[in-house]
Structure formats: structure tokens, C-alpha cells
Amino acid sequence: MEKGPGNREEIRDFLVGRRARITPAQAGLPTSTRRRVPGLRREEVAVLAGVSTEWYTRLEKGHISGVSEDVLDAVARALRLDDDERTYLFDLARSSRRPSRRPPSRRRDVEVPSRVQWLLDSMTTSSAFVRNGRTDIVAGNPLARALFAPMYDSATVDGRGRPNIARYVFLDRGAHDFFVDWHAACAATAALLRAEAGREPDDRALRELVGELSTLSPEFRGHWAAHDVLIHHDGVKLLRHPDVGHLELTFQSLELPLPGRAVHDLITYTAEPGTSSEDRLELLAIWTASRSPAARQSPEAPPAPRP
Image (cartoon, rainbow, N blue to C red; front, side, top):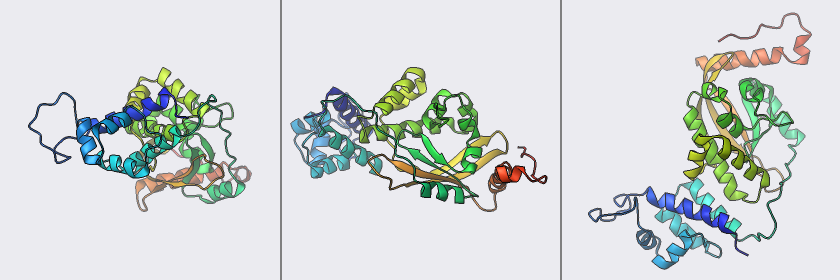
């Protein structure tokens, strides 16, 4: 049974948005004719993908169930989708083939194995944590707790004291100060949630999170409407830490092979060797170690760092 209107709207808005951003010149098409819509016309995408205009129009209206991977791949090439966007399109097609008679269920969280926590704890000079697809931080090492102290201490944490990156970014005013480029953090976080929605459209907790953010945050509503997606997220992050000041850190995301379909990523934050950021991150690590139960028994524990 094909998915209901909600899934079709996702497909339609995504394809329309990707079509609108491609200029005729980029697609190697004539640019002299007058156009009523931005970007490419449906018939032009159809030609580029090697399908009929009628067929592509039906696809853009959300009727994606039963479409072959070869055809989807041709559409992805015609729309110049990047790897993450292509994956998202295939996820939408896959989810449209699932039966949808039952209401969305609350997906059970996968327990993080002890061996993963041991791995996190062994990384003493890097901040490391595990994030699920809803951007909950489900495990972390002491340095992650110290580096992201404003997030852990935020009123947006859940009843178990577990931070959610999206809630912090969009609903806590302190995030504006903590993330030097807060707007970039907003865009990336919304795009991560959009990708997860394509993978797991029946996740009730995810729907509730998106609904909460849409209700309370105009910034989230704007980014959500853009239908941007992000799966593989790494790069450089600029943070303004309340204790050690400005940090320029490299972050890397690695997918963890945990049981079930749930997506879990191991995220590490490190500093370039020889930089002031390395010194400040090391100072934060020393301070964190000094606050451990074993270190508190020593009278020589160093004082808390200052910016």
C-alpha cells in the first residue's frame, strides 16, 4: 500500500525545490526563452532524465512507489543531487513502499554497548559522543560533557538528562553565543533531521520533535521548508566556550554498526596540533580529569580554567 499524502508532499516539495535551483545554463539548455518558474521546467528535467514529461510530472506529485532504481538514479543525475540528496530520494522511495495502515510507533532506543562507552572513555584528548538520528546525545566521554557543558546544562535536556542538539540549537538562546556561526549550525541540524525523516517517516518521537521545533522556532520552520538534507557531516566548528574561550575544532562523523535500523554516529572533536585551540582543549581536558572522583581526593588538583 502506498504511503499517504504526507509522504507525497515530502517527495513533491523536495523535487520541486531541487528543480528550482538548477539554471538552464547549468543544465546546458537555451536561456533566451521567457520563464514563469525559477530553474528548470518539468519537461526539461524529463528530457534530461530520459523519461516522459507525463511520467516525471506524476513522480513529482509524489507517486514514487514502484519506480526502479535506474530511473531514480537518472532523475538524481538530472537534478544534480549530491550523495546525501540522492540517498534521501532513495529513502523516500523505499519508505513509500512500506505498508502504512498503523499510526506512527515510538521506536525503541538502541542501548549503546559497553564496548562503545569504553572506546569513548579511552579518547582523553578528543571530545567524543554518540548521536542518534534524532540528534539525541546517547553516550559521551568526560571531555564531551565538558566541551558541550552549555548543552548538557540547558533546560532543553530530556527527563533523563540527555541533551538533544536540535532542541538546544533552536530553543536555547545560549546557543547563539556558544556556536560562533549559529546560522550554519541551524541549517546543518535541520538538514540532519530532514534526512532522518526520510529514513524513518513513521518514527513518532521524531515527528513530535519536528512538531515541537516547528511550533516554537521560526528559524527551524524556515530551514525545514528548504528541504535540505545532510547525512555525512564533518568539517570545522567554531565554538565560544564559557571557560576556555574561542575554539576552532575539527569534527568527524563515523557511522556505528549498532543493532537495528536506528542510525548512530560517533562524533569526535579534535584540535589542530600546535594551535591555541589545542592548548585550550587540553586545558579543558586537564580540568575535566581533575574533577573526576579519583582526582578530587588529591590536594594538588589544578584550578578551573579561565578564558
